[in-house]
Amino acid sequence: MGSAFFCARVIRIAGVLAGLMVSVWANANVWYASPSVLPKRYAQLSLGSQPLDDAWYVYDGTGNQYIAEVDAIHHLGLMLQFPRENGVIEYGFEGGAHVGYNSDRRLFIRLGSESSVLDIDSSLWTGDVSVGTFLSIKPQPWLRFLYAAGPSLYWGKISGDDDNQNDDGFVIDTRSNNGYVGLNIYQRLGMEFTFSNGLSLGASVRHINATLDFGPNGQVDINEPHYSVLLGSQF
Image 1 (cartoon, rainbow, N blue to C red):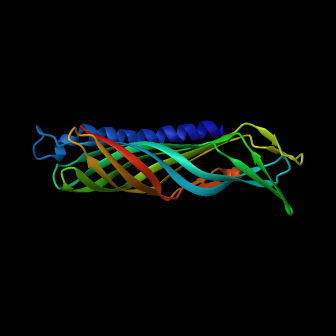
Image 2: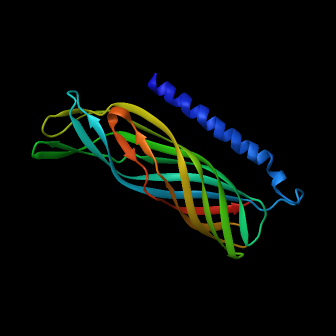
């Protein structure tokens, strides 16, 4: 039931944000002084990583707690920007989505003064959908700096499907399937170089102060900066 409720909650909230983005797209012409000549818009594909250096927790059958390190989450995202008009200074709406994944886990087991390490089979998925506003400055036609901010719906899901036994014979049940949904503000700062064919290459740093609370499996703070390479185009 918990998994079904989580999925239903994600679908409902994501549907609201998606409806808002579709409405903004459909009514974009009213923003412009000359609707027949729409300004160039921007699409950016982001590839990056978010260092976490954090931990989540698993429990064995007797309730003992063990710590599993999470080093980083690797992200893929798509952002769209709709400026009111083109020029040296541009502003308008931004919307997009990101998804992140990490499956590299090592479990550090501490029993009194003794410790050992165990690899576990599990996965951590994260993602967010955001709608905000942006401001950009183009000191040169081929160079653009940008800043964006707005609300972001974020989610996370952690799962594991193995019983593991370490060298000392302790059995740890890592089977779990927990999800979490939250809402907070994101900020993004970036720059890009535009080529004569309209394609662009750049970099950005993005931040959202979010905590994924997985109940008995602990929590993961994803409030570290998210660094990305940007591959862009105009349309």
